Amino acid sequence: MAFNSNIPDIVIGRLPIYLRALNRLAQEGHEVTSSHELGKRLGISSAQIRKDLSHFGGFGKQGTGYQISYLEEKLRQVLQVNREWEVALVGVGDLGTAIAHYRGFADRGFHICCLFDNDPQKVGKKVGEGLVIQSIDDMPNVIKKNNIQIAMIAVNAEHAQEVADQLIAAGVRAILNYAPINLNVPEGVHVQYIDPVLHLQRMTFYLK
Amino acid sequence: MAFNSNIPDIVIGRLPIYLRALNRLAQEGHEVTSSHELGKRLGISSAQIRKDLSHFGGFGKQGTGYQISYLEEKLRQVLQVNREWEVALVGVGDLGTAIAHYRGFADRGFHICCLFDNDPQKVGKKVGEGLVIQSIDDMPNVIKKNNIQIAMIAVNAEHAQEVADQLIAAGVRAILNYAPINLNVPEGVHVQYIDPVLHLQRMTFYLK
DNA sequence: TTGCATTTGTGCAATTCAGCACAACACGCA
DNA sequence: TGCGTGTTGTGCTGAATTGCACAAATGCAA
Image 1 (spheres, chains in turn green, blue, brown, orange):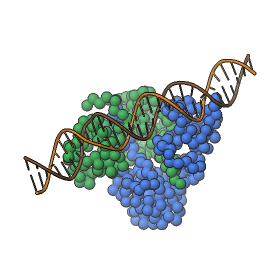
Image 2 (cartoon, each protein chain N blue to C red):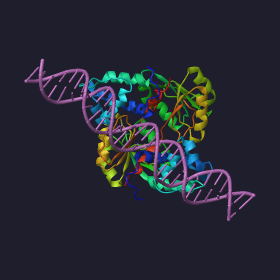
Image 3 (cartoon, helix red, strand yellow):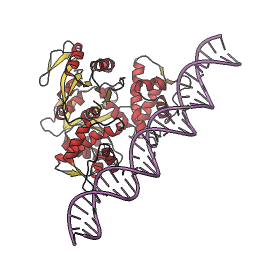
Image 4 (tube, rainbow over the protein chains, first blue to last red):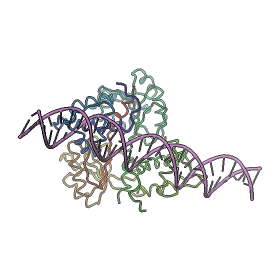
C-alpha cells in the first residue's frame, strides 16, 4: 500500500466523509451504492467522488456501482484506520474531561490511552474507566515508551504551543488541537484544528 | 455593508482565522502587524492574506502594515460578529452538556440561550447558570418567538436530520452539527460540521 | 442473442484558487 | 529634501481543482 504524496490533501480530506456516509448506508441496510447516490447525500458531484476513489484503484463495477462493505474496507486500508490507534490527551480541564468521556473515539478506533495535566492536584485522579491523570513531566517518557503517534491538545491557548513542541519532540506526528490558536510545527507533523466558534463565525457572514 | 456573494466561501472561511490570530497578537501587546507576520504565524502566504482582505477594502497602510485594533473591528463588521448572537442547543446528553458548560462560546459573542431535549426526564432540569432544559416539542415556538437564527445539534445521528428539519422550519438558518452525519438542507441554510474522528482519520493516512 | 438502461473510470475543458512581481505609497533618517 | 527600507493592493500567470462527456463494461429483459 504505497501511495505517494502526489495525491492532493483535499482528496484525502474527503475520504473520511465518504467512509462515514458508507457506514450510514450500511446501517440502513444498503449493500450497494453508486457515486450518484453518495454524491446526492453529501452534496458532492458524482464525478468528483469517482475521481477521488480512482486515485486508489477501481473499486466499483460499471453498470452496478460500489459494493459498500468492500469499498468501506478499501477506504479503511487507504486511510489506515483498519487498526486501533493509541491517542494521548493533554489537558484535563472541563474540555479535556469531556473528551476523555466521549465514547465516539474508541468506537471508531481511536483509543485514548493516557491523560496528562500540569496541575499537581489532578495528577493521580481517575477519569472514566481505568484512566489516571499523569504529570505532564512524565509525558515524554510515556509517549516514547508506548510509541504514541497521535495526541489531542486541550490546554489553553497560552500553553498549547509549548505542549505541542514537547509532544513532537517525544515522537508525536499527528495533533488534534482544541486550543484556539495556530500551531507552528515542523515538516512531517500534521495538525488539525477544532474551534467551534470559528465555525460559527464562518456562518454569521451569510446571515442577512 | 453590502458584500455580494461574489466573494468566495473559501475567503470567508479564512477571515475567522485571521481574526483569531489578530486577537492573539493584540493580547501579546502588538499594535501593528503586517501580512508577512500574519502569514508566518498561520502558514499562509502574505499575498493571499492581502488579497483576501482587499475584497472588503483597503485596511492597511503601505509601508506600515495593519493597525491591529482597526483590522479586528473591520473583520468583525464583515463577519457580523460585532454583536451578540443567540444560539439554541438541541440534545443535552454528555456532549450537549459539555457544550452548554463551555465558556468559550459566550466569551466570543455566541450566547447559548436555550436547551432542548426529547427526554421527559431531563425537561425542567437546570444546566449551568440559569439554563433550563425545555421539551423539544416547544422548540419551534421558542425559536420563532426569540427569532433565533443559529442552532447547534448534539443529538445522535439517527435524529439529527429530523431535528435539523424542525429547526429550519422554525427559522434557523445556520447549524453547527456535532452529529456524525451529513445534513440535507435547503438553499440559504448554512451547515458546519464538527466530528473530531473525521479529523483524526484525515491524519492517519500520512502516518507511515 | 439483442437492445436498453446503468454506472464506472478518465481525457479534456473550464473554472477556481494561489502566488509572483511590481507600482504606489509611507516612514525614518541624514 | 532625497534616499533607502518596508509594505500594501493588484494585474497577471501558473497551478490546482472541478465538472463535462463519453467509451467501455455490466446486467436485465425480451
